[in-house]
Image (cartoon, rainbow, N blue to C red; front, top):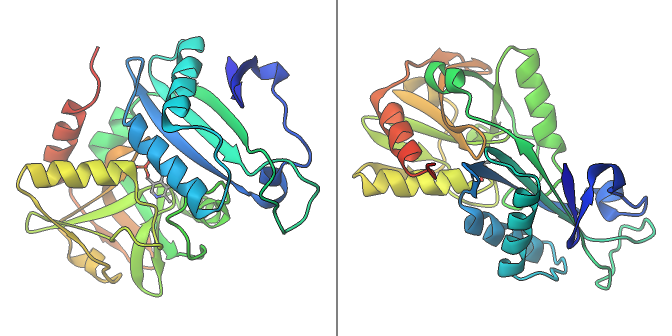
Length: 278
Ligand code: PMP
């Protein structure tokens, strides 16, 4: 398997990380995960645009155009002959002796790899258990940074409690999952947290909102408190890897169960219809 290292494709054994990479010392970097279906990168322009937006928000140099990033992603996936899987793309601020203060002169380090991956049909038809916990993250969750400790701690806690995803709340307001966005359904209306600094505006979230509205569903993007979880008819999470995955129970600070309802199933079918086919 080949790794994208800046603009080169190198064998994994030959890939190299510098000890003074700011990604290593500070988690000073950004990333994207792009899904590949039947050899085609899905929603790659959305991901590239968000990557560029993350770089801008962090005052990082970005020596690549959208078109160049797209070309590099394509090269990598063809070199690795990936048909169904994921492309991981990361850029750190660059290599400098450890110092909180970054210079604006360093050259960012771009890394990319691919990984085979296919849909987990069981999870998408049977749903998952979600674990409700505190959102302990910083106040710029809109930036897709590799600094993921809050998310990592929440995921471990969920798994230790036999749940497949953690849902997080900040002072009683539900934000999102540890690596996904949350939607609730009540009387055929969809509810999700607005795209503020408190969540990552998921590409799947954006596509699902668009899809739902196209099919005459009402979507309300407003913050809601924890107890709303108990009154919802259906709940699901969205992400590049999980697509639309139903939640069948919430455990932890709130306890409730859901059946996998008609709106979730309808959106799953419609979403699958939009994906690249053979
Ligand atoms: N929120 C968080 C915190 C995430 O890490 C992710 C996935 N990386 C998402 C939401 C979903 O985003 P996307 O649909 O772009 O994969």
